[in-house]
Image (cartoon, rainbow, N blue to C red; front, side):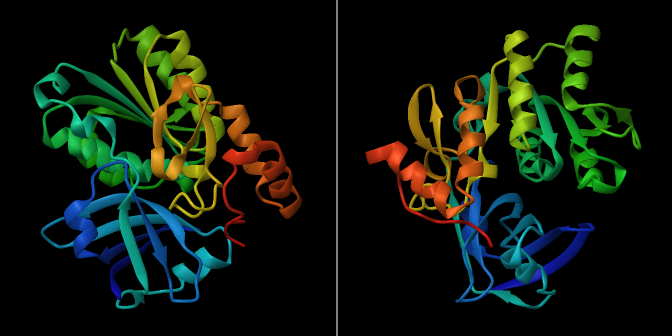
Amino acid sequence: MFEIIKAEMLTDNIYKLVVNAPNVAHACQPGQFLIVRTDEYSERIALTICDYDREAQTVTIVLQAIGASTMKMLSLKEGDRFADVAGPLGQPSEFVHEDIDELKKKKYLFVAGGVGTAPVYPQIKWLKERGIDFDVIVGTKSRDTLILEKEMEAVAGDHLYITTDDGSYKRHGMVTSVIEDLVKNEGRHYDVCVAIGPMIMMKFVVKLTKELDLPTIVSMNPIMVDGTGMCGACRLMVDGQVKFACVDGPEFDGFKVDFDGAMKRMALYKTEEGRKLLELQEGDTHKGNCGGEK
């Protein structure tokens, strides 16, 4: 059993949980995720790792209340326990495997949207600890939906740029406007962009970074359901090849991802009729029949 060390509400329906999970904390890297079950009867929920402390043997997860399973999960308090916390799963961020001296020659641009701020945090923290340069853009609907601001500021400092759709806090506008401002108006040069957030946000970030000739990595965790490669929910096309976000990713070359196909498929997968249609269309490359959280 995995004890919840700390439970904190970040916004009305987004929570941060610090969980005792020694094996996961020892092995995990930025970019990876976990599968969590509230009890032995609960469905599995795939959640990206927001932070980890190897010495304290804890991992931090941020989750949003969407359906019955996450609502049940969020009913737990400090001192309560999860039945399962399995991981780490998925592939670590590419830079984890790069030579540090080569990384220090690069400058990264991170673009986080909404709950996508959570998986960006361990990435910039990892880079900061190794002296790699970066800027971070965090976009959200309004000030009320902004999460992890203090944590991001502590790591990024003056390199953090916050923008809100409604202009209620800091800058006014979409993350793409800030990218254009930094690159075109301020003349910033970046070697790699990492975008994590809603599918539509990542799609338009990639559209812009293609124009800017800025290589971009995206995380396809929004389409994951089962997290083990069995259900097939996160099937997507990358450079014309079938991939599954949970085992091949969740991070991919954004220039090669078929966003329109992935979003259309995600919508179909929500209904039994849609899953049957996908099974027919995808033939031998189709997997499973997991409907996701109810």
